[in-house]
Length: 237
Ligand SMILES: NC(=O)c1ccc[n+]([C@@H]2O[C@H](COP(=O)([O-])OP(=O)(O)OC[C@H]3O[C@@H](n4cnc5c(N)ncnc54)[C@H](OP(=O)(O)O)[C@@H]3O)[C@@H](O)[C@H]2O)c1
Image (cartoon, rainbow, N blue to C red):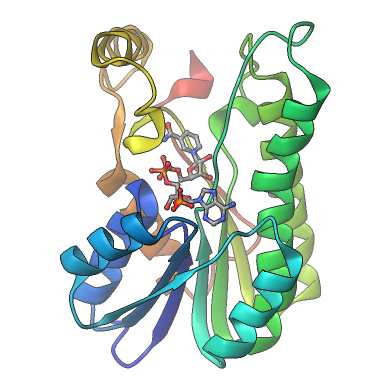
């Protein structure tokens, strides 16, 4: 149970982070969610109710991350699901876009761990987000794969350096969340159907699938430095 515990979820206004916030609240915790868009945060707050507080935060801005944690104060668990990702042909992708991916998904999580850790209770935890393309090479995912691998390695080293705080990493596979809302519905459905047909589980993942795994990592005091693959057997295919 997470009764009376305080959980900070950066990226908690959408997808996996929002679902994690719901599940954490159901177990009795208070939640702080943070992301860039006020609009998304307000909608999430309406769904989550009075146990949730919301903060506007851009994790690419180091100073903002630092002052965010000063405002939040002491807490128990940090989950960083914040990311905006992109893909594309290695040769045709502008290097600026590639660097932005590192800024957003790698450095965002780095700053969150750096400034969040000193405020986390000794029996608390940090959960970072990697992704399947770090473990299964896919055309169009050269930079994202490198970012995800870097996050996993960062998390495993932090499990040693920040101990006794536990640090774990989730590596989701293809999960149906608003992260692909820029695709047309038809293209998205085609993509999901194609992926599902290749996976041993014959379906894509849901935010609930991944949130359950975050809850496991938060609650199991004997798990640290683990990369938990939640991807329906994707890396076996
Ligand atoms: N969905 C998948 O198939 C999949 C696959 C592999 C890995 N993952 C990873 O799983 C994690 C969660 O993904 P998701 O599918 O739940 O994505 P999502 O639904 O798009 O949610 C991403 C969240 O991050 C926030 N965010 C993005 N950039 C931010 C920034 N710079 N500062 C603060 N907040 C930021 C977004 O809100 P704002 O726009 O308001 O900032 C949103 O709340 C990510 O690390 C993603 O890369 C997902």
